[in-house]
Length: 280
Ligand SMILES: CC/C=C\C/C=C\C/C=C\C/C=C/C(=O)SCCNC(=O)CCNC(=O)[C@H](O)C(C)(C)COP(=O)(O)OP(=O)(O)OC[C@H]1O[C@@H](n2cnc3c(N)ncnc32)[C@H](O)[C@@H]1OP(=O)(O)O
Image 1 (tube, helix red, strand yellow):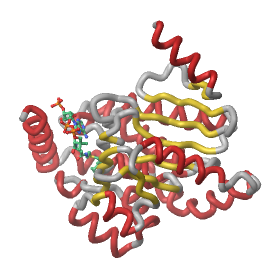
Image 2 (image 1 turned 135 degrees about the horizontal axis):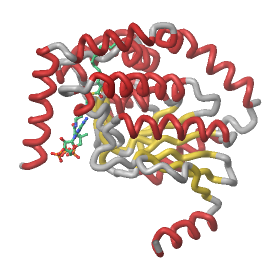
Image 3 (image 1 turned 60 degrees about the vertical axis):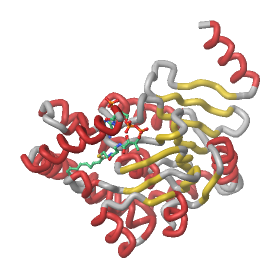
Image 4 (image 1 turned 180 degrees about the vertical axis):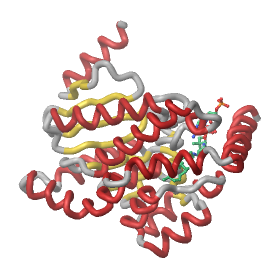
């Protein structure tokens, strides 16, 4: 409690205000001087995206809009893992009602993040496989700390990246590079990611990443907000519409693929291999 008060006081002095008071799995703060919001994922141990975390991310994105944020930095409180992607336990031997809600919330969160009116920057301060990579790809600018990995590795798990994951990647690195990376399930090192254009900047640590992210957002200070946001909407509309118009079909396809016995078997082996690695 004392620590909380001390932290709040320190944040107030530096002009950082806490939003999302009820959130537990994310923290949303805003810098009152710049209007830039920071959304930090904080679901231990690895920010895997389960229904509850996705719900909080989605609410925080709306809150940043309602608060007229000038920009948003997406990052993690865990220096080591940005996000481990979708929580595999949501997809392994799933409860039908819950897994439907989970996928629908993932669709909603991606649609919101992909279309925010404000500029978005991912400060990728750790590994970022699959769904973690999707979050980063949905931002307008990606800054990554050295010595980590990022990519859409779904094929390695015996599952497939849905069309909108693929489109998010193609829109950033193009068809040829995406085809090669996705079919192999390749995880890029920070250096490789920079070379292929998957990320825009390499930094030494999160603090440097945050400074660079603020500088990126600051570039838009003199660009009229609505002109910028409408341009982004039109650039991204085709990609988003392909999911918006087919959400039910996308959900059914996901359920069909993920409940296949061979997909369940692969997921089971993968969970076991992660557990074995963790106990070594
Ligand atoms: C229209 C649709 C059509 C078809 C689509 C159908 C299906 C496909 C659907 C969706 C696509 C899937 C997207 C995904 O995001 S799948 C998830 C992919 N993620 C990964 O492969 C990452 C796995 N994790 C790791 O590689 C490492 O954990 C990581 C490098 C992130 C961190 O390493 P670290 O050494 O720091 O931690 P660990 O000791 O490995 O893990 C700690 C702890 O956390 C558990 N864990 C890790 N990742 C996950 C995860 N993604 N979900 C759930 N749990 C995870 C791990 O087992 C350890 O647990 P414990 O042993 O209990 O401590």
